[in-house]
Image (cartoon, rainbow, N blue to C red; front, side):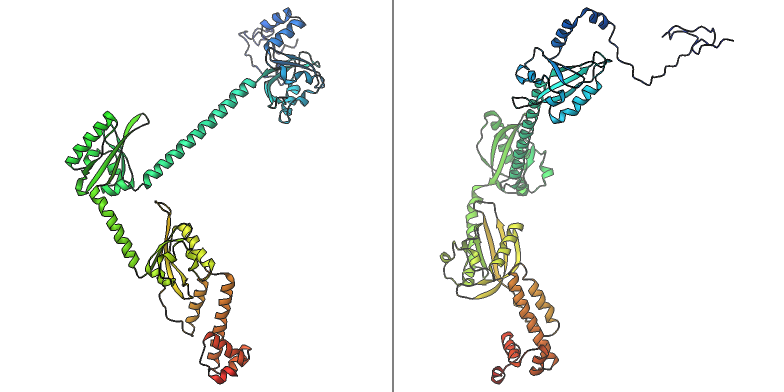
Length: 508
């Protein structure tokens, strides 16, 4: 019995024709081949290629590409053809006889390898962008694809000039950068406006010009009106004044919308908040018209301010505690009588313009510590130090200081009062930790050399007191215990003010 073909129909036994998948008796299963099927040209291309000889094909390639190269199997450029573009001044003619991979930049070499490796007769490789060094300075961007018309033959490289696309990309990047810079400037301007609006000491409200409703309010206006900001937002500004003041404000805003100008008015705030002067300005922003409403003290209240300021200065001048104002360079601008007494001078003219550090601190580092703390935190409380008089007096003081960097004249203010006098520490155990604590509190105010010297003196004093206590004031035994001569012990006792020394002991 003859063997049946595996492609024969199971019912009728007839083998279908090649590529005939319409035979109704068979169930056809398509299996993807292991090797890719080479791309075949569409139906019209074989007829077109039959009409083109070598010269005509070259003309078609030149007309459809900006640059075409013929590369041999070794990767060397044998022919170059420049299309109708503007690649004439890029030195492409010098590529003849050079390896294709040597004409591109370093980062583009892997792409050239891929283009030459993938070139085959089955179809055109995918496009890859590479860059060529250009005599003009900027790299020459070209988009390439390759095809090998004959197996083992030369490779045809088709190129398209991307300089126009690169120029558009650069313009797009430059435009984006310009937009980012403009956006940053707008944000910076808005931040400055917000900061000035919030920190302004003058009460300011922003109203919608059409409805007179409050859209923004600063903290100074919140304090003046006595209402929370969230309750003021959206409220008609007329309701913030008494009936008469509300009518005047209504007429003010109406005239401002009509003429763009309006005079000031004096109106009384609602709920007994007092009288205020109202100034209005018109401005446009974000396709809307707004009114900037400024509130200030009326003339009657303004006349009272100098009197209050003068009274405050009189009080400061008569205070029993020292008070001094300096500029940001710590040079004295003004000082009261108590400060003059601390520095042992008679008149304010003698201290004006002088650096405060001239009289402040045991050492220069202590004054620097005070000024550094004031600069970092804006204020200082209970800073313990000393004031040195011009004639040698030294008095322990406590300083409270504040920095006022804003205002018409930035300055620093110092309040100086005598330090509280505490009882001297006892010679027993409880006094010792207090003395050590006092020494550690000096860190940052005096130099380390001074701290070591004072710490050594404290330790010597405590050791002598302890030896005298153990020997029940037997000074000969105490000197032997401490490894000192009696004369050395008496000298240190006299130095530290320990015990009573008569003339015989001092001369021993």
